[in-house]
Image (cartoon, rainbow, N blue to C red; front, side):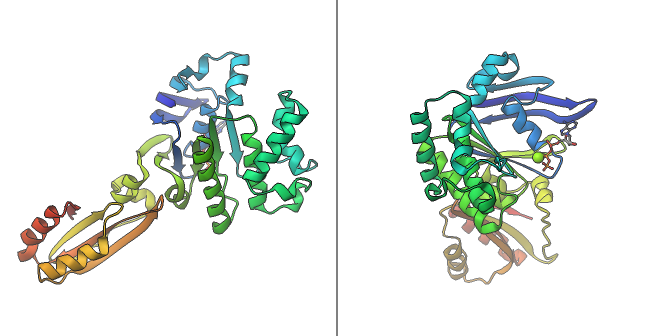
Length: 318
Ligand SMILES: Nc1ncnc2c1ncn2[C@@H]1O[C@H](COP(=O)(O)OP(=O)(O)OP(=O)(O)O)[C@@H](O)[C@H]1O
Ligand SMILES: [Mg+2]
């Protein structure tokens, strides 16, 4: 649905996006991750046509964005909703008025607006806050209003720029769950920009890692966390310290694999004790994935590797 090929973007003589090529599929929840200044927001603004790109191609539903004239761009942007870290609500307008605004600007009938606003406020769980003002709402509630407002024109894509960065962890989870629900119920493609790995793990099916405008990772979220390459490890600030003695084998447990029983079963069947050096299990997209490093005597290496292979476990010797 969104296809970016060899995209470059300069601000003056500074290159802020370098040779970006990605593909975002319809219905996907896609994350753009990176530290401050990586170019995340710039890429997002290119996607919604707010920002021009120097060269390369950026197509949304097969339309090359930079070829759109003013009217077409306006129509195009109607189909893209956007939410931000600081909600961008109008303080002197009520919740209802804030959500109604985009439809009023596009000249919808009052009855249509009324139905849509009420439906959306029910969807985000704020049907009883219609007449409140933003100052009377919590951060999470303000973001819910912003989400409802972003959905009024039936967008095909929802772009989110650090929408949970100003929220506490529990509120973040509830907003991410709402985004998931919207993605599933309304079949809206969601692109989220974040610097928080927790957000990626909780919601994204696919992620792009940006560093100084360069792609340093682009894969299914589970793959990125399950088998991080050197760049990803560096990004996560993770270093693997393993014993110098014996053989260290790293096992990767994909989703749905009974990792605990595998280790105990292997110990029992091979009649061997393993030293578990470290293990990390994480919940990604509601699946448990993880990896574990075991340390074994060199004499047992072949036996253990044969056993692991028989059980279709991904592994490597460190
Ligand atoms: N309008 C602008 N003019 C000049 N340089 C800009 C402009 N906007 C962004 N930049 C530069 O482009 C680079 C990428 O900025 P961008 O805002 O995309 O980063 P980001 O990944 O969203 O960071 P953050 O996490 O802090 O929001 C930065 O070096 C920034 O200083
Ligand atoms: Mg940003």
